[in-house]
Length: 123
Image 1: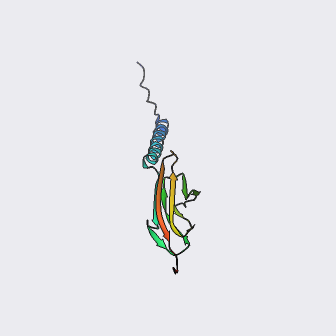
Image 2 (image 1 turned 90 degrees about the vertical axis):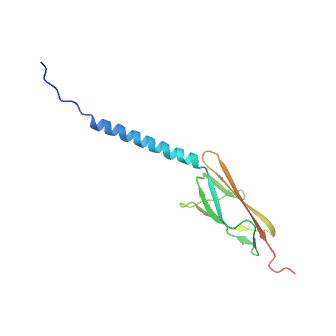
Image 3 (image 1 turned 180 degrees about the horizontal axis):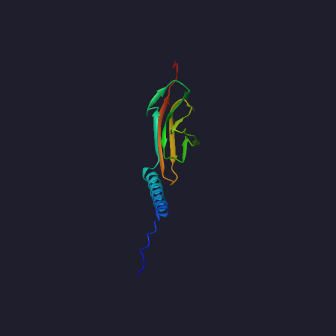
C-alpha cells in the first residue's frame, strides 16, 4: 500500500487569480458606467432670458463625463471638481451663449442661454 500523500495547496496562485478577476470586473464596470452616463453640462448662471446693462458677463456651471467642452465655439476648461467659469463680451441687444460638450464616445450635448444687453442710459 502506498502512503497517503498530503494534498498540495495552491493558495497563492488561487489568490492571485481571484484578485485579477476582481480587478478586471471592477475596471469593466467602471468603464461601462462612464459609457452609460454620457456627457452632462449644467449652466448655473445666467438663467435663460437674463438681462443686463453690463458689457461683460461671467457664466459658470459644471460639466461631467466630458472629454471636450466649448463656449461659443471656443474651447474652455473645467477644474478638478468639474466647474467651468468664463468671461464673455456681450454685444448690445440679444446674445446667445452656446455650451457644447462631447464625451470620449463622441456623444454630444448642448445647452443654450439667451442673454440681452440693454442700454445703460437710453435717451
